[in-house]
Image (cartoon, rainbow, N blue to C red):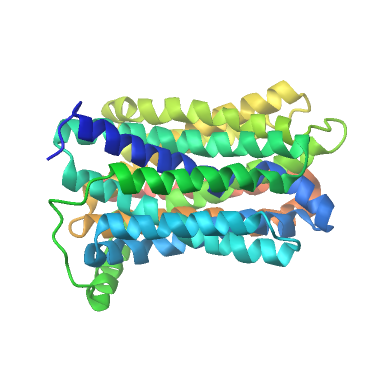
Length: 392
């Protein structure tokens, strides 16, 4: 086992965290650029958002495949293959000239991005000692958040300096570097037992999890919350890019600094769960998201930003508790149960813009807030049902 503070620990943890930063930067970098894409290609907000959500959909749907394939092929080899695919697709995005080509390569990129989330934690659990695992997972989750924020900031800044497509050049370089460091510093698995891929068994495990009320309700809570939360940022970008705000792409990228309050929510989730049951703590997070959404109805920019700080805290509080709940209550095939949660999570993110679009057309940002409150009311009810089921 790789021990905490050993040279192997620092090398492998650095390689995985760098890969996480690059993967999630690639996934999220187009979000602050959607108003510019809408202008350049003469698209509606919903059409422009497809360039972003098609990657999250590809990532979400690929997770179940990678989780099973890594058991049969090995962790490092499959991880390297998907990171190479990420590098090639990111490089291809520097050359696209039409929106159709952009969608095509973003879909390929999204499928390749799913390798790391599906494999990283499994590799850590097999190769690290318990103290090393706890520390490494904390670093890895922080790297996910840092990548998401950094990718958006980089994209916004480069778009203001020249062209939105410029961001793919440094991301292609970083993607290639992540491949090198994974190849060079991530050891081959020594505690991995290869298992033949059995489609019937995999489908049986997924079906079993979906029949468990304590898991299914949690999947729905995570997916439907992310459906609204992530796509609120998409539509508020169009609001803030228009008069009277007229924010540039780099300023829109700064809006995602509000995710840092979500980091605080994730850290505090365990302490809050010790004072109340996890489903009630999830409900608290949902109530905070509802309150934060209402705050954004104010016309002053600082108040709108504060609303997103509140929503981010509530969302990541609920998300952290839901992720832990799935792991604790899966009676078998825990990896499959966790992968299903992420599938709901990312598929929800992918269809959120479709759900919000009619409300946006009807009444602009006020309509988006109304749609958000309706969906959050549903997830609040699901959290209450989860509490009732768990109490029994």
